[in-house]
Length: 461
Image 1 (tube, one colour):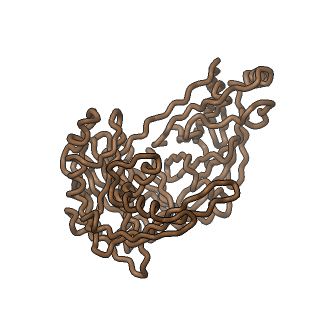
Image 2 (image 1 turned 90 degrees about the vertical axis):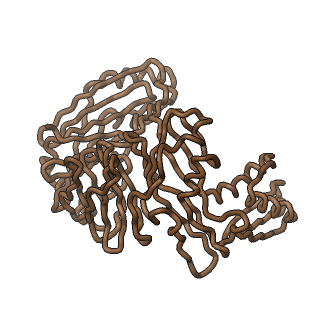
């Protein structure tokens, strides 16, 4: 599956006697792993041709990579590795660029003041500091601040987390470019109220201090996606409205070039830290997908080769997939998926599955064009399958000849496999991994996954 974060676990391999006993036990079956299949619904021949790749480990010294052929012609083979020392943890470095609310950031500077930093506090942190200092111990206090006293517009800070480039932009030419583009004005009535409650000293001699905020204002932050192949970032604004009144006024997007929508900018890589504030942007920030303000952007994904942006939106007349070509920034396709907004979207190089309230929409891609293969009702899954597998994050998917294979771990010792076509569930089976089942002993921890994707599946060619 995509988005794999490989993790090799680092735990200590246990007492010598117990470890020695179990090592002999494991060594005896290291390449003879048995997978036990249990048919819970349907005919297992529906899974003919599915290969299941399972990864397990013990004490991060013993590693098993098992391949099991499902269906009528079952078969198992296992590759085994033993390491004399613990294998160190390894991570795929997560990269990203994010925009987050400056008002909240300025308020949070007060936490630094609590640690003794008192110079150059932003206005909101100063206001909070003054309230805390003027409120007697054991008392409560409030203070209302109008944002217009400190801001003309809602602003963001920009976190840059790319290879060799780690910083937060709060000033400088690149930050100013975002400020000029994202013009969401602060209204005269926008305000924030701080509440402070200094509790009495308790019997244990510990005094607690409680701070809260309310008011009428917006929290501005982003959902973003980078396309590394093109050094380009896409983002959308999420605006959380805080209000202490009965009416909610929507934000004004008219000051943003192109209005509300999905925004994008190219960025430079390989910069020194002192260069990022000046040279981070490699071009203009622009609205690449203008949207009506009542449209909700559900999520964004890249296609399998990273050349297309997939934007999922909930609109007044249904749920849509809009596809943009990343090189040209032009819309190439808009596909209506269903009447209602999706619950979950699972994107796999082989297939995309969108979980609607009562159905699964199955999409495939060929030459950059997406096709909705079918929409299958989920009632049969609820009755005879395992609905929890639909919400599992570590799922893997495969599609061929009108059949969707869906696999996910059920516990440390077992995996589930469902086969689905346009009519619904054809087969649901549970597979117990013999390395795990019954092989726990004194001083041992359960075997578990060595990666975020403990199981992968594919149709045999």
